[in-house]
Length: 118
View 1 (cartoon, rainbow, N blue to C red):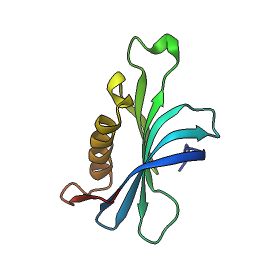
View 2 (view 1 turned 135 degrees about the horizontal axis):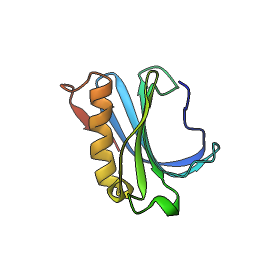
View 3 (view 1 turned 90 degrees about the horizontal axis):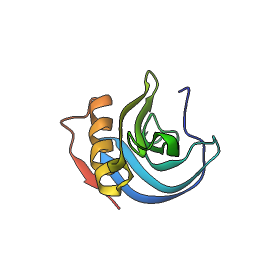
């Protein structure tokens, strides 16, 4: 994965189980890649340590806030794309709902139930 977020520190906000994947939603992120992440949802297969897919809410530069304060980005083996720009991605519940849907879709888990663990 080319643009994997570099996370120095983060606070786990929520955890989910989706089939054999665990998804961890992180906040209060200090990155090592110069990016200002508000939230990151990382999807990790059971028994592995490295995520295979990320959904990120990244704060945009102040001069671009007219379009939206946060970019919603998906990152995987074959994709790195900002799929939306809006202020709403700064809200934990709104971000979590959309990030889970994007992860399910990208990983072919649309019919797999989501269980919130934390």
